[in-house]
Length: 285
Picture 1: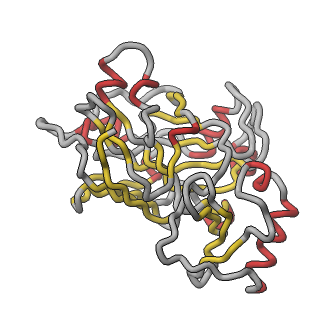
Picture 2: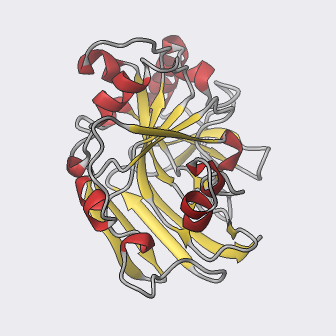
């Protein structure tokens, strides 16, 4: 299933995109799309049955904003330097274990919402990423099979980053990762049954119409199953938590000088095979 949330910011309603591409209203069945829903197999079953029967009301998508596909996100766990080609382009050695950092859940915005270039920024960068959404409480998972069984679905994430704040301003990466609007998510939460192999997805990103990233999750150093298993040994993952799993080569930081960092007025578009497409216009904060 392709689950999404539509409407003005803070007032989104749950919806479903059916197999014919028709937008359907879920608000009569469930109050929202969140961790509680993802952990409720009976509720998900009711949605599947209603979708198959064609009984869900149609929503007019004209002019309708698409919000983040998940409400009340608990935490956003991020994995850095998780693609062989990205590590090579930045001159970094491939890590021996996953590099883990966090984004605050309030960085999450809709897939087509405005992204704000922070005040004083000179190195705002782009990163298309596969987001993993947790559907069952996960702690100390032992196998890859067990890890994937805890995944509710997948989404497109844009891990916007300010490299000067991240690398040159001291401390951890957090200052360059948690600026307002720095994690567009969606358009859809695609349930795991529709993604048989998360290591066989193409990822692309364009800046002002120019293709900048063209990669595949096959290049991940630590595949999705290993990331979920590994992280569960350091923290408990709950339904509705999100893991951003890293970005392929092609970021501005990896380009020759002068590096083409983002500025107000730029347009970024990104997509992952089967998971949908985003488009953001950048403005000054």
